[in-house]
Every structure is written in structure tokens, then in C-alpha cells.
Length: 175
Image (cartoon, rainbow, N blue to C red; front, side, top):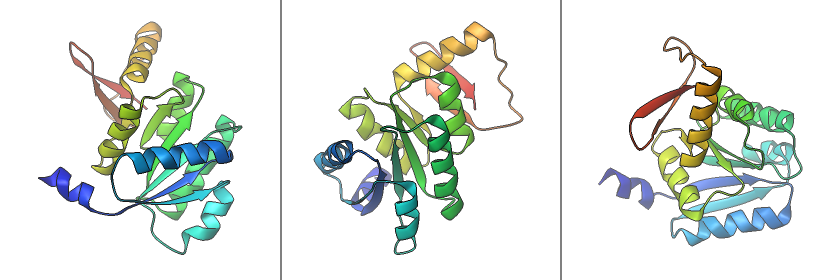
């Protein structure tokens, strides 16, 4: 019942993507989900911040076409400083555990690789709208393998944790 209430609300989404083709594609995906989305498009974070005062945004999608990790982190910080409650999804073509960890340390709500499936994108939107963090199953497996490889301890006293389920057990990844 709670899910239907969330889906019935109009969700304002801002897409920050320098490539008009990628921006158009993301907009088309959002419209294909059948949800009620108010979508605005920006080519830079600066453009988004100029227009942000005009209205509330629920979700910001930061696409990284032609952008570096440093640019993405700066974008996350700037968006978060203007609205600490906005949900941020980072789309990136480089699936590096270190890079993903940086995004979550800067308080991103979700990470999606460029090859994410349509169902993964839709699941991400549902999860973050209900207050959860999100990475795809494949990404969570890469993070788990990396942590097991370098034997990184998971501290329960600091940072945020991403919860995900594998086929056998639940794990926590420290961000």
C-alpha cells in the first residue's frame, strides 16, 4: 500500500548530462516506466544550480558523459549543499570500487553502471524513493570480491553501509 502512495505522487527529476543524446535517452527511459515524472534537463551542474531556486527536485541524476571522477564528486557536493534531502543517482562508465566508494562517501544515494538494465534503473528509482541506497547486483558482487581480496574490515562505528543480498547471505559494504 505504501508503494502505491509513493508511485502516485509526482516526482521531480533533474538530469545533469553534458551529452544531449544521453540526456534524451534517460528522459525516454523515465517516461517509459509509466510513473508520473516531471523531468528537467541540464548540461552542467552550474546550470542546474542556477535553476534550482525555482522549484523543488526529488531526484538528481548525474550522468558522467565526458566527465571525470573529480567532476562527479564536485557535482555531488554542490547539489547536496543546496538540498541535503535530494536523492542523487550517479551514472558512470567506469565501474571502479574505489570510485564508487567515493560517490557514496559524498552521500550519493545510488550508483548505476552505463550498462545497467532497464529493470535495474527502474528498481533503483523505487529503492531510493523509499529511502534506501542502491547498487546493482553485479556491482555489489564486484565490491564484495574487492573487499574480500584486500580483506578490508567493515567498521560498524563509522560511515554509511550499503546493504545488499547475495544468493547465500547478506553483506555490508563500508563506504
